[in-house]
Length: 235
Length: 290
Image (cartoon, rainbow over all chains, first blue to last red; front, side, top):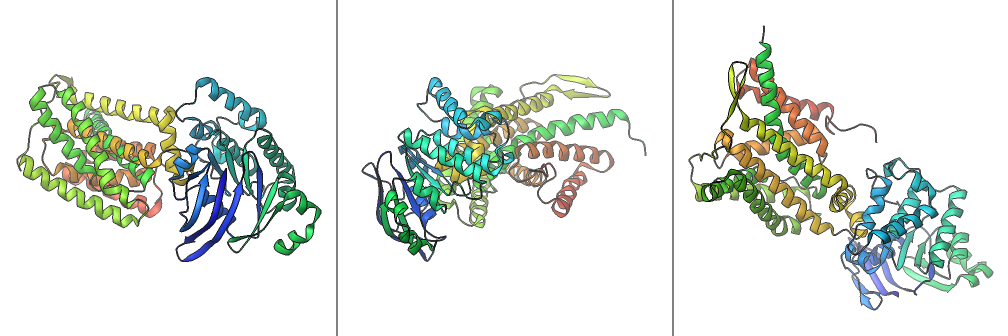
């Protein structure tokens, strides 16, 4: 469904992605592991149209999307949950959700359905629906960021370090949400530092190093054989 | 030194009326800054163009309110064209480039107005000539109507931003352009729409202000200056702040003119500007806690 082939990107003169190739199939959870600064977030941003690839192809459902304006990418069914969450701090929780909900073609009934579903998964957001996004705790903001992405009814979610800086209780809640999305048939490209979570939640895992994918294996294989993880991530 | 209470009340009304017209200009300016980070130095010229187009439309239709609507729509469309042709290509560049671009546009528009409509002032006939007694003077109802109408337009803008589908998108883009666009909000289109709304509001204030002063190609510069003071004092990009600052500064000027001549009273707003920049550079009417 989503394919990157030999994608190169630059920030100014620094070469960030050095020929990344990976694939996410419909409904699949794919983990993307690697140390800090190897280009995992840039890979997601490139898919989202926030960074233009200088070489290589990014295709989604057979369509070339490399360098496409990000609102068009979102309309195709790709949602982005950024690393720093990027909640609209001065907007209420409800207004944050409406940024994804107020798009053409969403009927009243569908709106209500989507909101009910989100509020069932994240009861705390229902409680705080009229509170400014900036007043939520870190974990609540992460939930809001995921909930906001779900409002787009995406086919794939690009999830960038969702558990970063969260308490263990919150981490397991994020894991549950990933499983729920997976059951609903939403594909996920998961960038994480949390290796155990990634290996448990994912179907397949790519490991990146210095702007390229170095290793690729089913998550089950990596769970059984920890040497590969140790080799690339040093843990 | 005793100032009669009547004079203070009259100046309060004057200050509020001027403040509302200024708020109409400044809210467009601050909205444009808030969403695009563009300081529009041509904003006053949109006020001026609006007044001229209004005067022309009044000549054709003979109806002031029709002229007001026509001018607002024409200048809004003009604003959209201006944004697409001049500002969209500069998005994300050094702010200096947009300052230079809009300053250039303002010069072109001023000279265009001089060429098109000539140097002499045009009179825009007010639609309401009735007056009411206010202590020792006859106060024109038109001035009150101007303030009420300005308040209504600003109120409509506020409701649109607060509850409207695109209003929420605009506020989201004001806070985080990249994230808003990643949520599927067509941010480039919103930029054009916001510029058009700001331009239309500037034109409306030009038409409303026209009967109070007379229309020349230089009225814009004065509005630009005053609107900037207000936008800085109110907190850049903060709509509520710039509305409060418009009223605050206009009231101060009105009260100051009780003591000194109106020409000198303008100094008050510069003093407020300087004090704000010195002691609260983020703006007077910005809540400190987030």
